[in-house]
Amino acid sequence: MDTGFSFDRLRVFLNDRWSDIADLTLQHLAVVAISLAIALLVGVGIGVLVWNRPVSRAVAITAAGIAITIPSLALLALLSPVLGLGWGPTVVALVFYSLLPIIRNTVVGLREVPGDVLESARGMGMSRGRVLLTTQLPIAWPVILTGVRVAAQLTIGIAAIAAYVAGPGLGQYIFTGLSSIGSVNALNYALTGTVLIVVLALLMDGAFILITRYSTSRGLRA
Amino acid sequence: MSTLAGIEVGAGPRASARGRAAVIARQVAAPVLVAIALIATYLWVSASPLDSIEQRTLNPGYILARVREHLVLTVVASALVAILAIPAGILVQGVRSRVVRAVVLALGNIGQATPAIGVVILLAIVWQTGFTTALVALVAYSFLPVLRNTMIGLEQVSAGAREAARGMGMSPTQVLRRIELPLASPTILAGLRTSLVFCVGVATVATFINAGGLGDMIVNGLKLQRFPVLLAGAVLVGAIAVLIDWLAAIVEDIVRPRGL
Image (tube, rainbow over all chains, first blue to last red; front, side, top):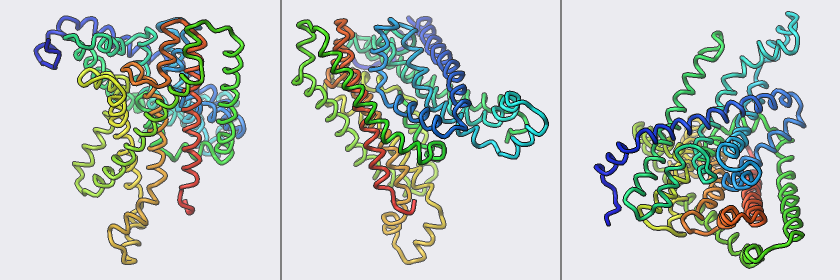
């Protein structure tokens, strides 16, 4: 049996499954977006708490730095007896790996806010909370978003591995390709999954340029 | 997991955010945490009664064999990447063509966006399963980030330093060896370190294409619902990743030219 690559077969393959493929692509996008939103809240929260405290700052960034080196298959496998299969362990793992870039960039961004700007804000009678919300976070925002962007690239790839614990998204096609090695469509499955993930990652990276541009406070836009 | 590499490229903010205290904290914290995790796992596993399936896996012989496979895969792949990608980066940077450089950097970005599991499995489908395939996939996968970091590192060398070296009468090769490479070395080493940690992770998924490693324990534990096996495999592979990153950080510190 010929199991090699042929454009005709790929076309038939895509034609037969396009709604399935669209569904998986959306799932992939959704799980990454949900995880990033949670990681943004948690990461910026931690960053705000530690940025001005040298010891906690070192602890937070060190811990996140150690955490990110842990192979994703190991973490996903460890989470699955506790959280079951599917979306649960996937989202938790993706949030886990997003924390380092987001915490680190929040800290860097907040530390880069000039001291005299802070002083003027306080001098205008703003409370700490208001200074944070209306001065510090807006100035740090582009740097924080860069962290989210790095996290996005990272988690799009990890989400593919999460398909092994029945996670949502295009990784399912990659693993279907693996389990059907030797059959006609093995290559088509793995190729479709992989290529679409690459496309998704590149599109998302491009989207972040736009998001950064339009969510940065007007006075700070270059 | 495709973009761990991107994190290390911008070495600037990282260094300033962490500072000296954080670096030292990490150098102490990593081995301590690993030791605690390993001892706790060992105590827990040895205290729990093991059935025959678990005994077949949770013995020193089997575990050491998997650890060896994992380390060989990681270290050989990273060594090959260092031998291939750094000279390639120097060559590409040496070609003064903007187009070539832009193409390589663009390819690097696409490579970074590619999921590792996809590369491993695609290669297994079009070629064969097994250790060699995993090795090739690892090298192919880490090649671009290291190449990219080499190019970026060389690009960041200030034109003034280069000109001064030329003015002192150094030949282009001497400038490269004595000025450019030392100045670029932190960025190049950061790339290699990322690729090492990365390889530990990707070597874990090598189990899917029958290439061994600690992924075997994780996947078997998951499939056969034997939590002690899964736990031992996951903790071991995590420990290896953290320790390799830790060692690489120390090497980075030692190798860095004094003036930097």
